[in-house]
Figure (cartoon, rainbow, N blue to C red):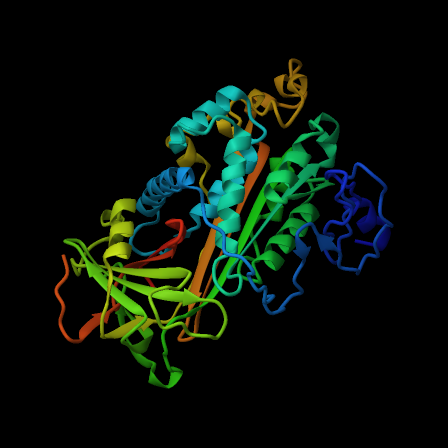
Length: 480
């Protein structure tokens, strides 16, 4: 593609509230964003620009070190909303786990999913919002703006936890230039106000546009999610818009583990076959807690920002490693409930333990979870029929009385990808959720030293104890 054609493809308008002048433009694909005031100069083709809320990290760049000057807390009335969101996502996780089977890993991020769905709900009808509120279990939320305010508070609490920031969320809205004239003008402003989401236009029916968005997600997840969208599907989908959340989590274990102690051992996978594992050997006395019930043994390990070890039970994040007591258990049949997860986290007691935990790098492909969400009750709120997107697009356009836009056969698709990785030193997790708008359809005992060995399938949960929010949940069936 020559330079002139590339510029024509990437041309964009600024689309934010009046005070917002500078937003991100990706390297190699200059994107011009919407604005209520003056336009910036046309960027150079090879010049990286900036997003609202921060600079796009360069490829291979290290994480920014952001010191938290204040540590926020949720309002008491927000805590039932956290619990409802956890429970909904565990239902979704259970459905996906049944489909993926015992041979595969599964990772999702409840917070990423809820954020993307929250952006979507700002654009739906009252009837569709009522459906969403009931399905998620938010009886006290009166409007989509109330829900967005709650998600904004929750995100602020999580990002302000710890000495330095561990959780890095980012949101964006991409409007197809083919349907720009039908967008309601206040919708991008709402996205920016509540989700700090920048907005842009480009022709979403072209593969190059999906590559632009993949690049945005890749940068915002520091290389953990490189291929969120399939560019080959752009023309067929002909999406009206894309709502995108990306999130990256990075923290250090609050224990001391030496690489020299790691040994090659055997992990028995979900199918009962042996796999080679690089098994970390950890002797923990202070920062790791243990709990058990009739189904699980659970280690609760502190996760801290930076290199400084707290070696206490006051870490801003916890990794819960949950091992079924039944040695031949299928994870799809042993999924913990939210009540179990929080009870094990609360009941865990510090003790002296010898721990064996395999190194892990679980990267999954993008999952289309649309049908799973529909089966849980999200129908109207996912644009079925499309007329329920009445606070996002013009109602007469959505009604499509002549059938020009084939709106009877369109709806919103929800895509999700998440990954989790750890070694002796640290933990990384990343997630991205894309909503394609208007897509064409096709009891504890206490020995003096406890040995806990994760040499068979287990669950891993990253929890924010202050809010009880589950950030990530993973079922680890294999190390391949």
